[in-house]
Image (cartoon, rainbow, N blue to C red):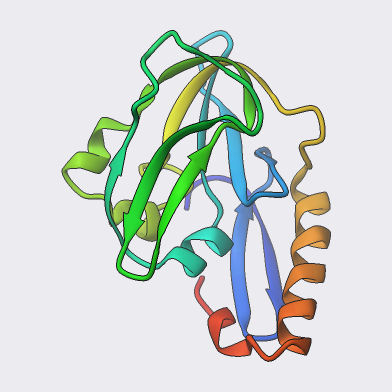
Length: 159
């Protein structure tokens, strides 16, 4: 990864998170697109991709220009492990899904912070978004609870 990152390691889960990105408690990242005023890309964090596994398909019934708000269902992804709805973590207007995912949805897992983004929004992040350090603290608590509940195998190391 060419972006400056912060390394996180807890139990058997290890990952790097881009330092300048914003994060949601629902395990999405948000990053402004350089040179595109007000356009942000959104994707799954490494933790989310670990839980979902390899993706095989995605769909965006939400149309470009449609208004979105945090918590609104805007599409879905399907993986080998699970299918999942995708929710907006931005306030603004949908700017479309990542067209590359139709060729290779697995890139969401192999390169989640650059090529594997999910969708774009012209707007701003949800009000309660976190910086990288806040997200790492939040994630640490989740992994600790998972370990206490006996879900440790899901957190295998993956940088």
